[in-house]
Image (tube, rainbow, N blue to C red; front, side, top):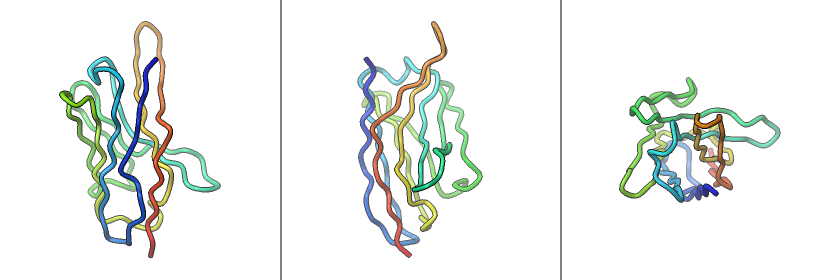
Length: 118
């Protein structure tokens, strides 16, 4: 069973930075992509960023230029560096791992709270 454990959330003032970590229980290369989603109170979960096994990255328009996703294969960890944080970035951030074969599957972490004060 795949386990994803997030850490690094917290309370920060607008304009500040945080780095989220997602530690996987197995090699991150066993997944076709890993990424981050977030869910704010009263809203649906939304895509934030992902990184593929080919090191291709994709970001939501709302975080482009401010967030950076990266990975450390030796540590089986994916990171989300968040800079220039805004109050609207406040949400629970969830790590996600996606595998295509033998059939499409997704795994999720338990989430970590990020709160940005104005």
